[in-house]
Image 1 (tube, rainbow, N blue to C red):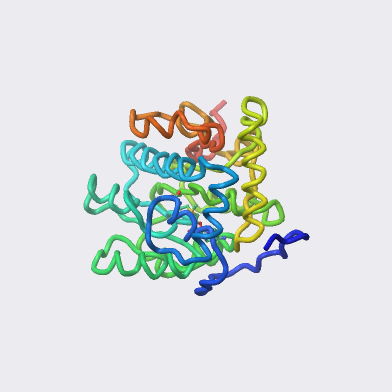
Image 2 (tube, protein in one colour):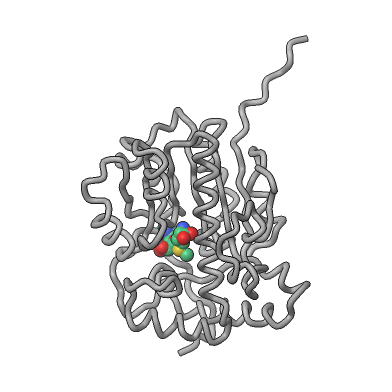
Length: 290
Ligand SMILES: C[S@@+](CC[C@H](N)C(=O)[O-])C[C@H]1O[C@@H](n2cnc3c(N)ncnc32)[C@H](O)[C@@H]1O
């Protein structure tokens, strides 16, 4: 069933189980080959794949980007992470990447989806250095001041604040630029903020057929509990105010510090659909002595 009118404004807050309403978390799980999804999710995900056949490839490219940015954060000395919109646990979870490299590394996940939270809690049982908060990232004060977050992460030291594949679900009406600024301001200088989103801008110039397909995919998500909001390179760049962009700046996902993996996805039609960049929070500007 396709809605004729735009969906209503989504109320802010954690979501409970609703197996009848397809959602972003479980559809992403389906694209990645996971089993934590219901019939309604699979049916809408199949519709998405019909209109944009490279949808699973787009999910894998984003997942690969997540792995690479976490490794860059680790190389830069970051040992604690806040992962906003973490999703249903799947292959290559952030705490696994972090704790493989540093067993004392800390990871706090945040997701508003009950399926993601339940499965993460099961997986993290007994792991004292990782947890999940059931909260809505559009409510940054709740996230940043949650006792679970404050007891695991030390905000007087740099953090890796991951916004990977999440701000495509946050519309202009929730002021993504303001949200990023609020999270940035909670982080001390030296903290790293990777952000990836979907864009229709680049494909519009280079691949008209995939451009039409991504617009159709966005329309399919009108029947899901989250809608997709594509952003431009300039939108994304503007969110890094107060930060220095790490090399190579903002690029399509497969071109951001490629590591030779996922060759086939790197060549798929999905390659122009995701963009990302990583900012380093700047120190306070101090006047040079006269
Ligand atoms: C596409 S998945 C991305 C998962 C992971 N970050 C990755 O890149 O592989 C997006 C996740 O964001 C969650 N999400 C969407 N909007 C949210 C919000 N306002 N607050 C918290 N979680 C949200 C969804 O439930 C879903 O699990």
